[in-house]
Length: 197
Image 1 (tube, rainbow, N blue to C red):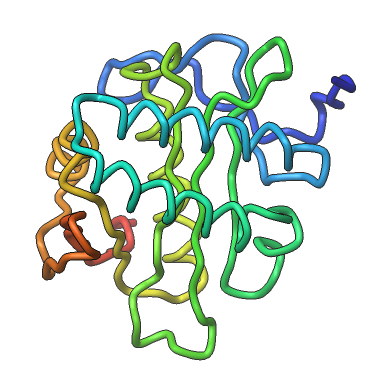
Image 2: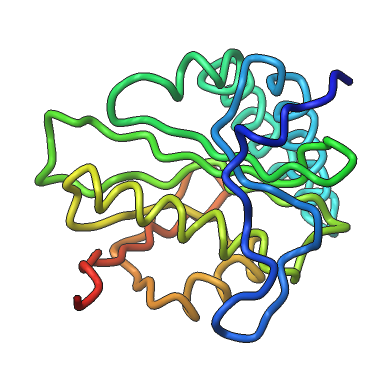
């Protein structure tokens, strides 16, 4: 893997205000064309781990279809897709230049009355519970607010109980739920507010 020029990275804070520590030496930045395969691999690994945790066959098949659709859609060429207006993807890069997490916003800039949509939040299992997901979500929320969106939403499946706990702690609330075949999906929503000056 080619070395990254560290000067063009947005440095991640070493200590966060809530006392959690972000992994030392990691940096958060926008996705690049050279990240495509790493992003796809991490997505596949996290999705496989999610559905292999004792789920029934019908759920695994449906989840596989959803994973394959994402790989053929926005994750096929993430750096191009997420460079368009209303879209952005952030990656967290380790000190060893590996992509250890990512998240994206996929929204229509012409529809500012609609919420920004948070998508594809994935964190390598070795980097979970270290503040990576919180940092990615914060970046996405800040960017959406700066673009003029007043709310953000996302969908999670019933299999993602740890993610659900995280979003609950970040003040996301249920908007609605629906089924995609045997997979239960919940849409979560949060109003975005500018910090007091």
